[in-house]
Image (cartoon, rainbow, N blue to C red; front, side):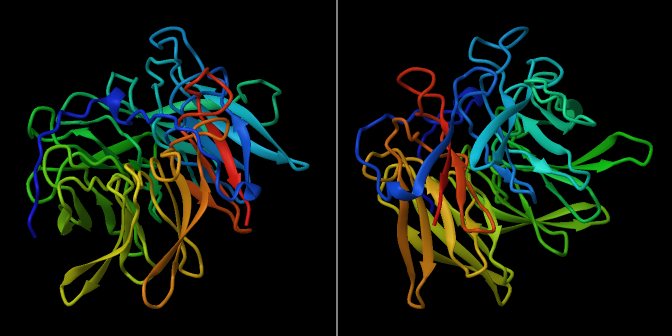
Length: 412
């Protein structure tokens, strides 16, 4: 496979997301779309980059990368929040659960949260701790407190340090295995590699007496790729799958196999340098994978006879495509969002349907960058009733002309 290289500048933590311009155009399918919350940049947060998470009761949890607390080491934009959205008699109410302080507790969560077996929330911050990010746990109060911040208690599980430790956990949510171990990625850090090391996949194992112990796989920047922006998914056998970015070398789709001595990495497929599959991959239900790229591609990888076959499923026409994980429903349809596609170049929510001879794409909504929001980099979640929920990083009624983002719903 031929790879086309281009010169790029090093991606820095504050610039992981591009600024998308607002261009006015009418939305498509507006009868199915509504804004559930428009972020203000105050206690509710601002600029949600991470994905949402649904619990069994239908509550929605998420993070905002800014807003919240503005003291200590936080800038005037704030160090970010964790929030909960609850449906009360048809009205959605947002409750801020925690505001990061920008010190040991972390700052600026770029990924969504994961619900643990005990009902508490686990997540990462891009910065804070010792300066390179944290892994945190949020526990609810014993009973309702009426506190505007939700009364939740934060415990930092891990603070990332200097290389060879990992640094800067970015967009990927944490995942649990069946034993209760926790997995994630860091964009930088790890073993010496280029100017700031090539990133890691980390595993946090709970100790019987309390606390956690961490082990890592360090990317080398060779055939295994470098600098993952997405998280990992885990199959029933405990194998991990993910993607690397195009920060230093061509991006890859990889698999990590657990072994007694650590992890064995296998590169399943090498993409073109400009593809940037920062949304990661999902399992396809038959041992294969689906993924998308910022360069407008949706693809499938299928194992066959000791190799993995690549199939291009769909190509979008906008200037910025899929930044987040896809969703697959029980019928095999794929759902997702783009950041820069659509008539206004502000992104779309889409559905891909297998037709037997290919895939048919349906735009569920086209964002305008105004009160409805723009650039839904955090992806979307699908509930049991077929309702789609997500956030936008920009637009909305708060924070002036640029907007602080919105939380939206699309009903079938």
